Each structure stands twice: as structure tokens, then as C-alpha cells.
Image 1: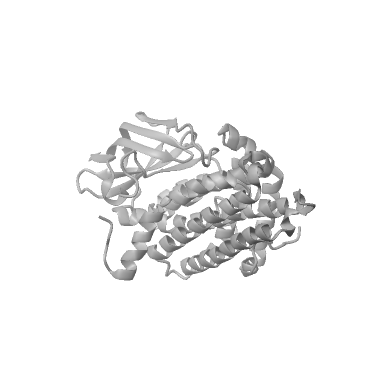
Image 2 (image 1 turned 45 degrees about the vertical axis):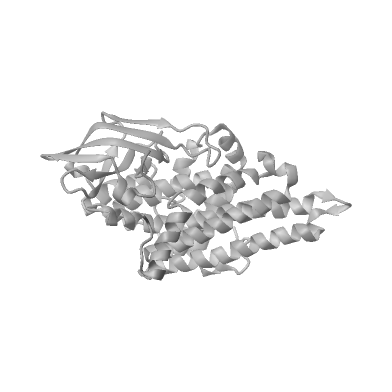
Length: 392
């Protein structure tokens, strides 16, 4: 299989990838087109996740690339970003699944686990043997998670008792293990725990009626006197600053997924503009249609430049919270704008799943909101610019 640049990669950022990275992208792209694209609309419509793809994605290395314990070959954050882009370009729900499994669950272990914990759990996640979830957001705590967590952890000897609730937890209806973040009642600091989902007192209930990322299995979690041993406490998670280490990396990858989701809508719009005829010719030959496509491509190109650079900063070890925050705020805004333009190009056909733009249009709303809202990311960057916190 040969490597071809995406038509939407107008400045050729994919040329930054190494030969092994390109080969991995070619394999991933072929799998997604053959196995995921044909079922994506149906799964979205039925609000079902295609669990049959979990192991094949593991075999492609999608849960392995970032970690010393499982990395199949040397690779960059830019490459891992392009993986997120490819996934979202075909199906943002699948991209979200991988982001939770790899970035949030395995990422928590990589950033905050002991060497023993990393060696025990990351390979199991990487192989797809187990499915992971990440429990931070709560019914009454989202943007204020740093101070507002209500889930508690109380230590007694060599065990901890967790009580509380979590909401919007991706993968949680079928996860084998969930990373739960809770406030230690002794020192009021946020700690992380590896919680097997068959532990007594743990329950997860699917959230129904979503209009976005419908194939993602989000759940409400309740924790009632859930007892976990000290050995399952993330040994290097001692405050919310440690939690933020995980979010710094995943927020950047969500930005890549935002670009991918915009590209998915753009690709569909370009194809449609060449096929749909009005006033005696393909609509792609009309000025106003070309204007929509060019504006969308401009947003995609600018966003690609930003995500590539923030990933390079990650590889250089100098990426900061405000870098991820600005990238998430900008790229998701441009995505939201672009998918609306692309949907507009389809007219009435743009509101049906059949034409492969409606799903990207709807999924943009969730991507815009999760991993830090527009407002919170703006305030993080604003604090850096002015030196003053405006969070309250």
C-alpha cells in the first residue's frame, strides 16, 4: 500500500512523519475504510458501540504507541495526533473510545502509576484484554473539578473506601476497570484509584438520549462504599496537579480529533459538490459552494498547523497547560464553524445520515465541550496572558 496525503492536508503536514509512522497510518486508514466506515452510521443511529473492533484496533497498535511498556516502534506525538485525526475523520465515536482507552486510562497509569502498576496494567489495556474508563467528571462537578470534586476516598489501614458519583464517563458501560479520581478525606487532595468494575458497590448506568457521539457508551457511575486496596491507588497521584498531567496530553489529542472530525465533514462535502447537480452543472462549479469549501479548508489548515506545533512541543518536553488550552479552544471553534458550512452545502440532504455529513455535524458539539469547555480553556490562556486568574 502506498502513502497518499489527504487532500485536506493542504500544506502536507503528513510529510513530517517517518517511514514507519507512515506505514502505520496506511494500515490504519485501510482498516477504518474497510471495517469502520460501513458500520459507523448504523452504530451511531442505534447508539451502539461496535465492540468487535476493539481487538483489531489493539492489533494495529492504537493503545500501545505512547507507552514505554508497549511501544512497537519509536514514534512522535505528531504521529499519535495523526492517528486521532484518522479515527475522527471516519468516526469520532471510535476516536473517543481510543482516547479514553489509551489517553485517559492508560495515560493515567503512565503519568501517575508506579513502575509496578504500569507494568501490570498498561500491557493489558494495550492488548485490548481489558477496556478502561476514566472517572473524573461528576453530576455537580465538571469545570471546577480541581476544587469541586465530591467523590471521597477514606483510608483505613491498607484499603480505601470510595463514595460518590461520576457522570459522562466514556466506555463505562462495558469497561473492566475505571480510573476513579476522589478527594482524600484526610488531606483534601485529589487521589487516583484503579477500580475493577466488578467491585462491590460500583455500578454504571448508560446515559440515553444523546444527540452527539451516540455510539460512545457514556455512563453515570455510582460508588457506594467501594473498597479498593492501597495497591490500587495510583502511587504518584497526590493532588489535582497530577491529574492535570494526564489532561494536558489528552486535551491536545482531542484537538487532533476536532481537526479529523472537520476533515470528515469536508471530505463528504467535496465529494457531494462533484456529484450533486443544480442549474445544469455540479454544484462545485458554483461560486458560493466553492466559498464554503475554501473557508472550511482554511480552518482545517490553520488548525493542523496548531496541532502539529503543540505536539512538537510535547515531544520537546516544553508543552504547557496553556498551549493545550489554546489549541483545544481554537481548533474546536473552527471545527464547529466548518462542519456547519459543510452541512449547509448539502441543503436538506445534510440532515440525514445517508450523506455522511450529519454525524460529523452532530458529533462536533460533544468534541467542542469535553476535555475542557471553551470558556475554561479561554480562562487558562487568559491567565497566562494577563497574569490574573478570572475563574471566579
